[in-house]
Length: 122
Image: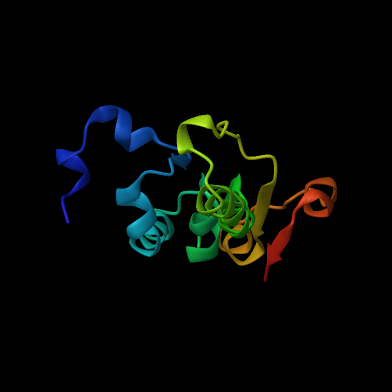
């Protein structure tokens, strides 16, 4: 691990990290969350970040998207051309809050936010 002397100046003053849902981060979510915990940084990002130990995750409900994909497969198998099937955007999103991470970070999550969460991890 590099010492702080080798880090860019802006990186030594980071208060929180937003992790984007990119393949590299999805596949290394646990390692990213562990690094955030080691640096005592709240992490927000996609659902798997919260599940791996980050503070908050928000993103599409992947299970719902997979189920909905079956509709497209059914249409194609019945003869529809994929080019004729309209592109659809996700309509269901999930908010996940990790209270264990909040506690470690010394943060209090407002009750109003907890009530809106789809999943609260203890």
